[in-house]
Length: 106
Image (cartoon, rainbow, N blue to C red; front, side, top):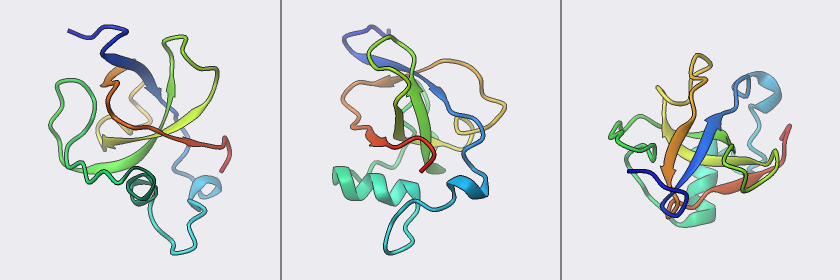
């Protein structure tokens, strides 16, 4: 069961797959997932959304919607299902998963 102590409540940020957001800022042209791995040292292989075990990971842009931060964008290791413009649902991710802050519009 998800609680405020054990999980973050987040929402996928829609519209971040376009050309404006294509450049992760990496000198090596790394993906958002690779940028997250470089910052955290994590080689997680499954989606961090509660009760999801998909392995088709991307570095998805999410925003916490549980009142713990204000309009900050984060990179999270989520699957294509959860990193989809049709996904408007709130999702719970384990609070032990390290999120990487990104600048809006990066």
